[in-house]
Length: 184
Image (cartoon, rainbow, N blue to C red; front, side, top):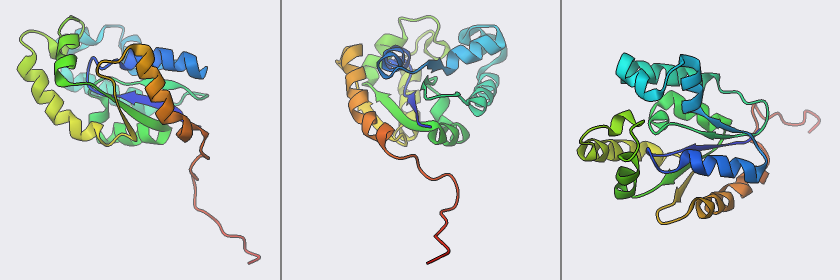
C-alpha cells in the first residue's frame, strides 16, 4: 500500500498541502503532530515547555513507529521528524516521501508569525538558519523534492500530484525474497 508522506522544514505547508492533496486523492489525512497532541493531551509547544525537545522527539518516534493506516493515506510529519534515521526508514517503508522545500527566508517569515512553533520562539532567525542547514541533508534523502516557493497551496498540490502519481500507479515493491519458478 502506498501512502504519500510529506516532510520538510517548519512552515513549508505540509499540513495545508497535505489536507488538499488528501482530498484530491480521496484519501484520509493524518498529521503526526496532531497524533502526538492527542496522545499527550497537550499542544506541541506545551510538550516542549514542560518536558523538553528530547522527550518530544521520543514521543514522536513512538507515534511514527506505530503508524499503520488501514488504507492509502496522506501523512504530514513535523519539521524535525525526518531527521531521525528510524523515522526516515519507517516513513520510507510506508510509501512515497515528498519533501516540500521553500527558501529559508519564506520559512522564517512563516514560522515566526505563529506562536505555536517552539523552535521559532523569540529571536529565531539565527536558530532557524542553523536548523535549516542541519536538516537539509536529511530532507534531500526524500524520494521527491518539491519546490513550493511563490506557489499557492493549489499550485503546490498540483506540483506534488504531478510528481507522485507515477509512483502511486507503479507496482508495489516486493516485500519478501523473490522466488524463481522451480520448474525451470
